[in-house]
Image 1 (tube, one colour):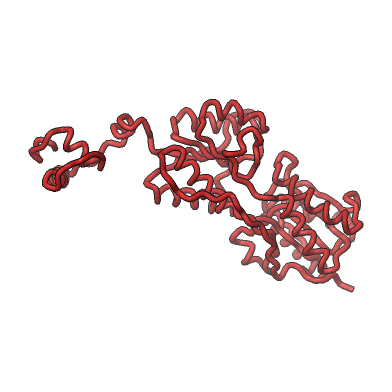
Image 2 (cartoon, helix red, strand yellow; image 1 turned 135 degrees about the vertical axis):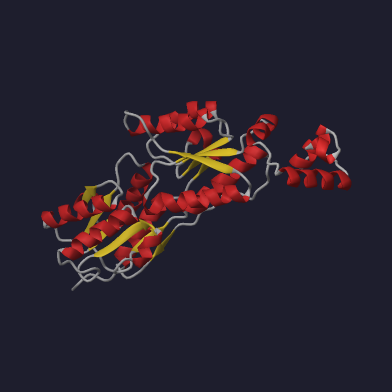
Length: 330
């Protein structure tokens, strides 16, 4: 191509890379030669010359569902806007969820990604030390790891649970049940602690509330709803630790003749897209997960590629009341 354009190899390289001083005439000739030859820069050669693959690794525990799909789409859009790409991994292997998570992150490290963004509830705080030692450009979403707090982007889930309790108490509810996520999920524990702290202030002890532990899935919500029905325990309000379990539980209760919200009010958590389209529409706690992901991604891009993108760590959480919550029957 340099020969076709009548310039030196160094000049052609500077035109293609956009780096360095080149005359307007040389730029025009190199671009014309590139068009004639249908030239495309080699990504491998570019990576070798810049010592950067232009890739960001993303670890999430799951690829499907109403939660991680939008999260990954948001990250992908942010990276494309900066002309970067992502490699996505989840857990794999024969071990427990923590071991599978560590294997998934190791996979991203071995791919020599310029930086890695991790969204996981399965790791212990002490796991992040060895990971950070291998990959300094590490962003952590939805949890606070004290040893690397500067790398963390998180929201106050304790406040989120408290807002759900306050909303139901304000409607006059006193008989509660909870469908919780797995105990291994720290954000689940935080939102439950916030919920029960507000109930305690209202004189309702934690052991007065029936808690069914599930798995954050639609199926888990349905099964937990069946468990609550079988228990015959009277309740007027149900708090679910995510929207998918809330939707599954609502379907189960309604199929068994329970009216929502006339008999039982239901509050979810996360404000996923589908929560606004259930019947009745689901009241929920809104958590800015995609906003956290965008800012973690921007911080990582700045660390990896020397950019100066704006980064925020102020993530608002709020309660959205819809039709699934009402006052308890007299």
